[in-house]
Image 1 (tube, rainbow, N blue to C red):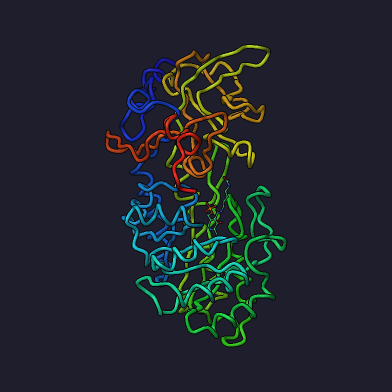
Image 2 (image 1 turned 45 degrees about the horizontal axis):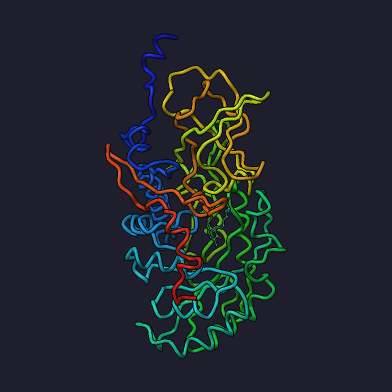
Length: 430
Ligand code: LLP
């Protein structure tokens, strides 16, 4: 159809910048984020939750996209931040995030990480287990941070016993979870925190999993919180409830995902029914904040026709783990040839030495040529997070685009970076 063809631009633009410009300026593979879309999505959460439950806070689950520039943007947009461990804490602090807006997670926090959190004076530590309370009992009297000798605010992570309908590696709220304590062991841990003069027990935390598409599961998890027994308060009178993250997103045109409003409606309705009306309500979205704002830009390195057509790109499993790890399905476009007919169904593959390094199984595409540009959509969450050096791959750069401009948020790794941790380059740091 000539009319449609005329209207279709040949080259994809993101935030007003063409992918050909981005590839030339920054190289490929490249993580590209639409900054305007990212900020808009964050506001859906912050404004939506504040309207429904004013005594509330949205924490960015920073594991979904741990880049210093993203921590800064999160703080600018009024998000607090959750970090899982010392590395994410260092990045948040380097970005200038106010420690009073940082919460720390982890089922295996070390003394060094807890000490770092205490020295920094972060707002809340989410306690996972009794051994962590032992560590805190030792460390709390010792630290010299700005809030030394003041009680540290703590939440207790509990296992609500909700088996989230998602990939097994993304389900964290079922009875067999390694994260948190079962409801019937919560009272003892809470009693310990209440009794300690340097511990300020504020309430409970749960997180049932990731990429959850049925909002009723969040409501069910919130309802379980009223079963957390506490000899002192009688259960529903905690000051704070953090109901975690996990809202699923639409990855492909045929997927269906709940809206942010539907998600907030579900958890707030459940909170109204089961929690104390004066309680502080916290949520920790990661994926649903960032996934759809990000794409990955690749260049085609070879096209092979051997029964199937294999279009291979200059990245793969090393920068996009989720296709292999969780079976996540993605969609791709030949981004410099948008107006061409999709005449083929191809195997879009990466360059790592695994047959499972398959980015898209059966991607409709024009007949691709070496040098064409491929955009893999909806890769803004857990893509950069899980990037690794498999086959000596260099972690790609990150750029934010918007209003016709682009800015570098993280540079591409170099071969010197790769060698820096190995002999003979290693210095004295262990
Ligand atoms: N809070 C806690 C305690 C979490 O463990 C997580 C994610 C979140 C919040 C954020 O969940 P989200 O809103 O992003 O679903 N490797 C997997 C994802 C693992 C998610 C881990 N925890 C993947 O790449 O799909």
